[in-house]
Length: 304
Image (cartoon, rainbow, N blue to C red; front, side):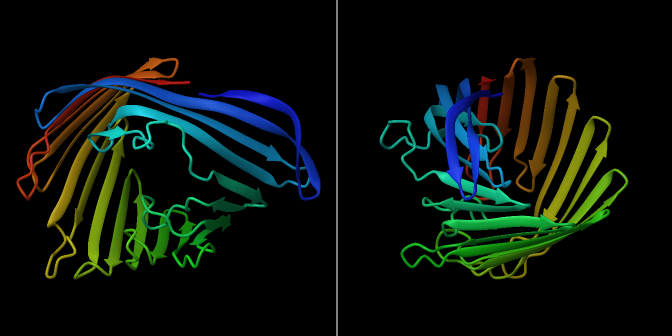
């Protein structure tokens, strides 16, 4: 959900003149979580975002934004509690350079002095300039650094033809420590099933990680099975595996998953309407190293 304000100020870019559009959006959450049975924690969180965009008479688009992030919230995808991005200074306001995107004729350029997300691993940055686009079934992306001798870079190529998809991505900064990596994958959709095979090669692993995954949809039910090697020398496909079943009907979404460590994950959400939903997540078991992975949380999300 978002609120839009049409600004009266004219923005100038290249040969055209355009009116700016300003949008406000965000989320709030209140939840109770329990990590490793250590006791309950009450979490409250707000994420408020302002975005500006414009389109020139010549068809060039521009967008940028900033945000306010404060408190702590349950990350239902990773079964953990996250602090806000600015917990160190406590202000909530992001002081990082804003990301600016410029688009024209199917090509998008992203400039960000704080770093552009790596195409192999979006949790780290590769340079501060990116370009992406598509032509027919072919898509491409490139990130590179131009500031202060920054030589981090990543690239991606993708192709889709009917039920077949293929992709290749590489980077020289896969983990933020200048580690080279590349991944190639091939997908095929047949009926209600999609099969994906991939090979993921990183300099800090003994062998490439080989994987195969199958996703099958049957009305409201979706079953996903994946098996992979671990990257250790001599590891084989199946040493690392995951199985999940999800069900969606009306306002209810629920899922159940487990893996080779027999760590079970249960999540459920109920859409309350008006941008609100209630959720419950539970993870239990120990990983291969014997670490307790128990986590439980219930809460409410609100979007505006």
